[in-house]
Image (cartoon, rainbow, N blue to C red; front, top):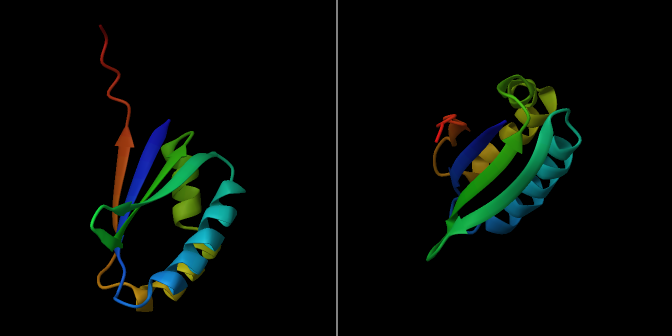
Length: 98
């Protein structure tokens, strides 16, 4: 299992437009094979700094979604709303044994 963290900074006045697109993205991702959960957060005191956290059963299933036409089309629609490119971090279990 992996977790994916996507950070985006939304341009001033564009948050409502972004929310409409991120709802579409979450709905489409949730129908993708391997998607387990997803949550959307805002940084306290900065609602334009958005963190999307999702959980996937494997890196391979995330990669299929990440490179899918559906996601790329949504990302193209989001780009004009962003102050900068999104930042993606993929986390995997460290398998620490006790």
